[in-house]
Image (cartoon, rainbow, N blue to C red; front, side, top):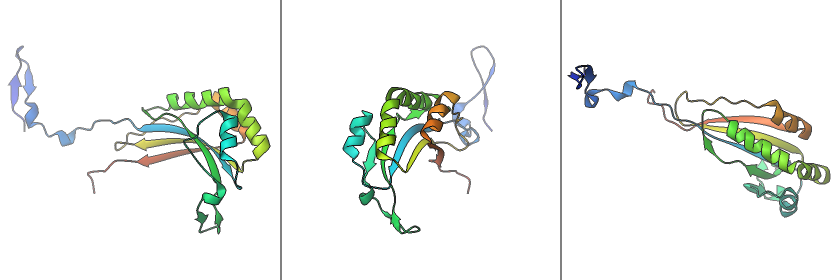
Length: 169
């Protein structure tokens, strides 16, 4: 048990060197980012898609360069993927704003890619890398973003990963 000390006003204080800090929990905001992923079941022209969208992909891979899925016996789809900035926050508003800005700014180009290149799937993913036990973010997708997702016939994935070690075993 920590000894009580008096401060200059005569109020009780605890010596901080004698506190068992394992009883205290500090919140660590998760790392959150969003992705727009366009998938193709054929060897699509990565540079042409990039040129039309006027966006630099975070990563892209042709169909022929993907691994063979052992369950299906065929290649995984090729993909072109844009990634938002990574933010540390307990909400995803900044990520949603960036994705919505991408849709607003590049909507016509996305429609051209969809019409000319016939992607097999379009995904919007929100990733949250949890940095502390029970420090999960609030993930809210507003209607203003949903209208773009619905019109693109895209799917939404919410991916949570735990990047912490628990002291409890």
